[in-house]
Amino acid sequence: MLSFILSIQIIRGSLIIRIPLIVRCADCDKEFAITSIEYKCPVCGGLLWVKIDETKFQEKFKHIQKHNSFWDFYFALPQIKKEFFITLGEGGTPCRESNRIGKNLELKNLFFKDETHNPTNSFKDRAAALLISHARSWDFQKVICASNGNQGASIAAYTSLEGMECINIIPSEIEIGKKAQLIAYNSKIIIEGNIIDDAINSALSPEYIKEYYQCTPEFNPLTIEAQKTIAFEIYKDINVPDWVIVPMGNGGCLVSIWKGFLELKETGVIEKLPKLVGVQSEVCAPIVEEFLHKQSGTFEDTNILQSKARSIMVKNPLYQAAAIRAIKESNGTALAMPENLMLSSIGDLARYEGIFAEPASALTIGALTMLIQHYNMKHDDIVVCLITGSGLKAPYVLEALSTRAKTAGMGGILSTKLKILSQISISNKKGIHGAKLKEIIGSVSLPAIYQHLKELEIKKLIHRKKEGKKVLYFITEDGKKVLDAMDVLITLL
Ligand SMILES: [Zn+2]
Image 1: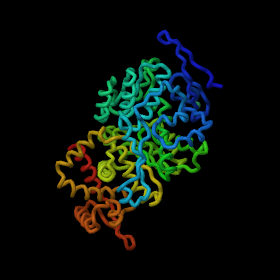
Image 2 (image 1 turned 120 degrees about the vertical axis):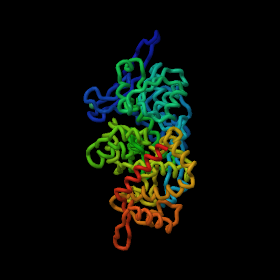
Image 3 (image 1 turned 60 degrees about the vertical axis):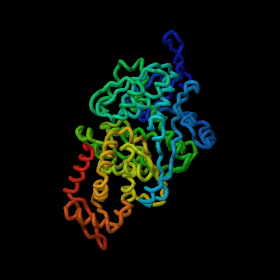
Image 4 (image 1 turned 180 degrees about the vertical axis):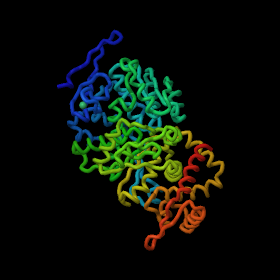
């Protein structure tokens, strides 16, 4: 019944009809029809989810032969008249089979869902296309967005097509590539605090509530709807994978992908679901901490500001509970990755696969080794790593890579030792043996691996333990310090 209530308003002398969004509270299950963006249930304060008309979903989904565009899935999105659709050619990104990383790890079916192919080089273009189309259909001329940069850059690009006023609230420490995009797309910029948690609250200021369409990803439930199309495209390209590995900041991306697969299952398109793995940097991993230890943990601003994965530094993720629920339902897991693995993973993705990814995305590659060693990921499982955005947006990566080019001779030697040390560090309390290191690192011979191990042992950065016939290597406290120091050095150089 609610869906027939239209909102008719006179704005600037014109009669405006807003087709209400039907939303459902995740906690109390009540439904509401809304004609302004709301993200919290007015009854219990729970998160609101958009309700989709699932009739004929399966039939329409089957008719899509091969996805070409985000808008091919319009039937599974909130209903907006086609005349309001706005597009820069988003979606339809490749889900490409690995060329070399898969072989190095002995994963036979490793894929990269490469969202850097979107118009502003991140997965957020899906949300921008849907949100700005929706804002147009409700006749908004102004939009407000608080973000760590990716969503802001996308929103700014899409509003530029229509000449809409766009205000972006960002923390002072966002990646410079994203800031440059905001300026280039002619967005107004307001800087609020050092980290995203400060900026988000100011987007709810009363001055923005009435006239501005809310594009902050945490506050607009259409963001989840837009991003769920990633799951649809993965299924269309390679069927249902066994694992999907997703970087987590506010948790919304993982939740979206889970919603996409759930809708496919509920409408009878698919029968099984993938395991979801959410990955965060250990510098700020509240979702992982709660998943593993039932508490969010405390994370220092000073460490967060030094992280290379700036786009996923969120201390109080709005989708934390929903993300944990999704991971549990999927029988997946959550992993906190050491920062020092990030640069080497970015390098591996670029060198072996031709993908230049932002640091947050590279965490998904770093996670593979852990999943094989400790979480029963099998060599013939179908695995998808989500590459959310481009490395060109992240200054630390660009600086570190250009520094590495200048000191290429020394860098080569240094990077193999560091890789070995990093891998031993990841293996944590279980330890790792030489042949396994050779398997993971790939291009280095086994005798060379043992030589490096010997040198690391002499310097007391690692120690060994015999278990049966195997010699296992473990990192020492000094080894950890060296890894941390190298990390800072690479960042500062
Ligand atoms: Zn509620």
